[in-house]
Length: 367
Ligand SMILES: NC(=O)c1ccc[n+]([C@@H]2O[C@H](COP(=O)([O-])OP(=O)(O)OC[C@H]3O[C@@H](n4cnc5c(N)ncnc54)[C@H](O)[C@@H]3O)[C@@H](O)[C@H]2O)c1
Image 1 (spheres, rainbow, N blue to C red):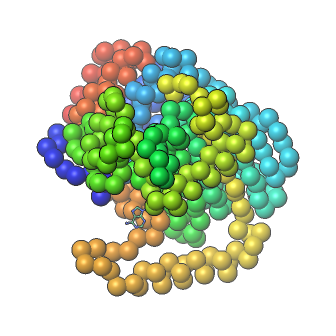
Image 2 (image 1 turned 90 degrees about the horizontal axis):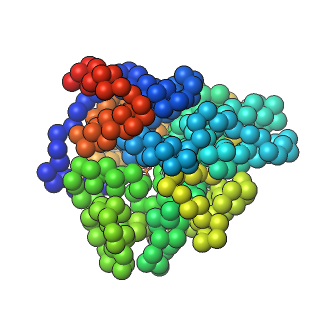
């Protein structure tokens, strides 16, 4: 648990298909094609369904602000700028990450099926959100993948041993498809908690657990406001020097190798938008002995789960299983959204050009 509960406001529970239609409508009013609006809605609602509210529909106000600032380009597509066979360099041209990352993965999947492996460097994409979504796209095509991502905007995380912000929350993700089951998906920010989780805690009026945040002078704190009100503090990397090392490799592989940017002063993208670069390696397990690998992976997962659970722990999860459980619960009971976030989305809908009557009609349907 990352949050310490205080007096949080009650949450709304919104059916996922209604939420999906609302998100689609917001982006169509803003000027997206129906296909773009659909890809954005698919991605954001799936993040909420998976339990990652920090990367779900709560991002809409930030995206609408990026659009107003000219930092997000609607209806842009991934452009292959260098084709070296098993290595593709793709420019995201500041298009919707939900579109350009989808297209970059489609290119990589096609190549990996042909060659056994493909490395895709995607640079300069507007926020690509929950990275597990891209690994799941590869897994749906039967492919293994791993992804190193950097955030080429405002730094938020202090290095191990440092006291001020030098890089982003740089996620790492790896996935392995399973026959007849949802894939194993490891997907996390290399900061102790994702930045969006501090936003969710701040909006809910709750504190975060100790060990994740420092104030502007390096003093440890549990107040999420240090990430949202001046004087700004920093997030800390997870796992001391190891998390810091992984975050640094996300900068090098995701930011530098893709031909994108790292967060050092002279290449840092001074923008209100979240710009991501990602290097993905996509592998066809059939280029290995796939049936043996599949059987060994299943046997390993079963073996791990026979460990005696620690006191207070209900069960052992394989990577990706907590998200699966969340999806089942939220598809049945709706997506929880706190009232502050909900009001911010309403305001963003208005800013996107959605008429008041339509906003009201959605709100009534959701009540
Ligand atoms: N695009 C960006 O710039 C950006 C930046 C940072 C984070 N993100 C995204 O934010 C999301 C949230 O990241 P996070 O760091 O808060 O994730 P997290 O701390 O919730 O960790 C999630 C990972 O840990 C696994 N997990 C969780 N609980 C488990 C348990 N009890 N047993 C076994 N495995 C367990 C999950 O299956 C998942 O793979 C991710 O989807 C990430 O891609 C995106």
